[in-house]
Length: 437
Image (cartoon, rainbow, N blue to C red; front, side):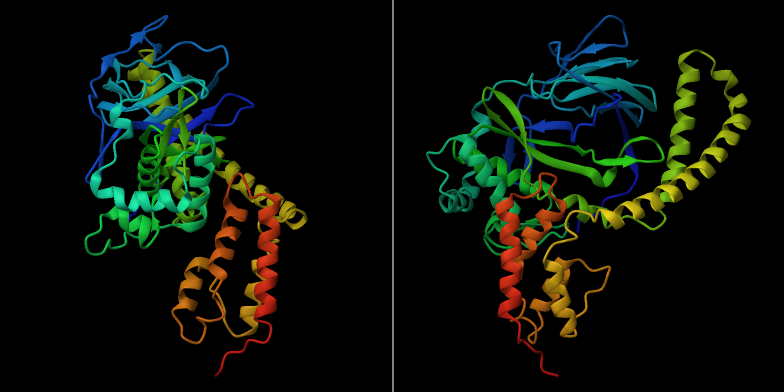
């Protein structure tokens, strides 16, 4: 089982009135070999500095750009920058050296333990190298499972505009997100077992399967690792990124540029959020206090006043205590407002007809624990000989329900009608069902 930490590793602040990018890429790879991704010819070359020694130029300037500020605590030495796609300038960044390779991975060298930098980017532009033969390679051992999916989805001789939606829909409806590493069985690779056997895994499986599947039909792809940015902290008024928000996705080369293509089911975020501790709010407060202290120390060092840092202790302590009490009261009032708002505007998915099915099951004496997901409950019911028949057909309904609740893009009106129709059909079919005592 893959275990991730709730520790905050990045803080992202977009420009006023803007949203943060959904993904920050850390490294890009182009060759898959025996379960591992590597980069061929990954040599780094120096990045030129801009107007001053704190500005670095990664690509051509763009008149249409967005801007974010990223802050992170790092180990001294070298590290890889976390950047939105299309980043072309890093500013307010006093590091010794920056290097970049042909895939857009950026490496920095610094003796500082705290870094804060501004990034300008245009996600519609692409500065990465053109596709090569490696971007179309598929290991021979993986081709049987890949080819079965290609034939099943009838992907041959179709345009990328037809292929990509089909592949995304396939992974969204036929697969489940999971942190449990299932066994691959005899004579199967982990990837082939994922595609043809258990169809359950974490983002690395989805990204790898997508990359090789698209390569098989002639679309160049690369594999990307980084972080998902989606949690807005009311305490900090900026986005926070945790260790468990680490993510993997695919780059596809279509329309003359590299573009992001993520097929991991959108429910993965809600799945990961279930691991949040009851004490996480308190841990986040202390994390924020440490962040502000580290940030202030970095400012003093920058202006050459490091010997006066001790003067910060008393006023900083007072400010943090006041901020702590104020933030606690704000969260209490915010929670009240959210509860009042939700009373008038139920969350998306609250009106799903799957709730009617749960009521029917409750009347039969089957109760779902509040800490138990529908998916786990369904597996439990399927394993019970007395209830296995009644839950037949619920798996497809549940997948559509999850997309309705968690997919940021929502579902189409036709899919919403199908969810409603399938639920009512199930209820009608099992209207007289009883469980023997």
